[in-house]
Image (cartoon, rainbow over all chains, first blue to last red; front, top):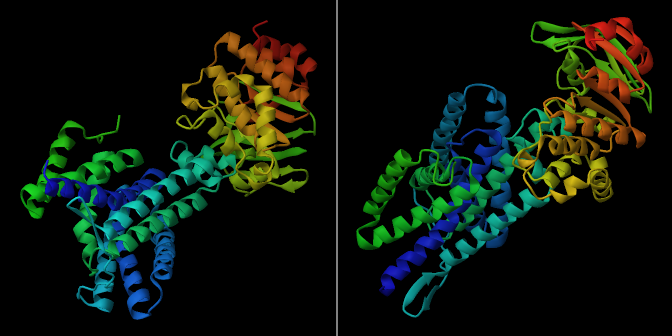
Length: 284
Length: 234
């Protein structure tokens, strides 16, 4: 195996970390509240603008800009639930899809209005590390590490805390959960805020690697949805595994052919797998 | 302790309870017996706040429970073991018990309460890491009762605890109820298994088509001519 292929595979692995993190957020919200946030990737876009604005325009230190952006997107997630989802929670699923789809266009247009369509970069250039002829960008390595830490933190939260246990329980019996003293509305709000926080964390990590523009959500939004469905919608472990599979196809396909073709390959594989296992790779 | 006055309730426009009044005093074990469809489950759901009332009053220690949502009623000290157990099947036994202790008042006593539940039901401790959905019927009933006890209730509501269980297991469940009684808890229990339930309660009400038809001590009810003929086949 030559060094370039190995480098592609490692980069694919590193890309998977961030995608897996975003997939977790989307799956969490779907699994608990039973709604799909079509505009999820656009919350990431908002987070990237927050990082850009706080760091470049206001000149805040980067870690502080990151922290405030994560909290900001978490609040945005809670607002999406309170203002858009909660009023139509009992109505048909298609209404919720349309409402969050509307949010997608709203956020993109709003961002265009305020920030114009310029590509903006936070201008942080982290070094590239060379190990035995393989070049790995430090920002990707950092993104992978933080994404993994975020996933582990989420896992511990869900496993070890009362609210986490309620989040895992609620989809299994939405009526009886009230008899446990759990306020369903509060759990939905907390879940939406956590989903937002994961989007915010993803935004920080992506801001280190990519330019932000109002339509950046379109570049990886479909990818996240594909990964979610491939792993089984609502299945957090399945989504995690699928993120790594898809990233490898994109990275290695990009090495042999071209990046554009590698996306085509990933979507072809997705369509084929949907015929064979419509419930997702890990679903029953 | 618990007092229901002229309670009417139902689902949508369908009425299943027509002016039911009953009392449960502290330390008592009270049974509500009656046939299928008499409104026994509706009665339990009204008390724990799962469904609204059409009229009448409910109070716990003199404080009204009307309009209080289910999750706040648990904080007042009422725990409900629902019909068909309704465990969270994919969560482990211990996670089911943990969620039973969700309210802040119960959380601080989680460790001691868990030890108590495991002492009452040693089988649950053996199976604590296993998904609750994989337990046998009797063990699931233990888990459902244990989950309710984790909230440190003063009043325990039990809806058809013997339903769907094998005869031997039913015997086991009634033994469990005796043990819970012995712990000094106040219990309101709804049952179709009339003969057995009259062995464990102090008093009972007979509910028929949404209204109380008879009331009395367990002995009075056991010896009542109508109950013996209609419900015990004697």
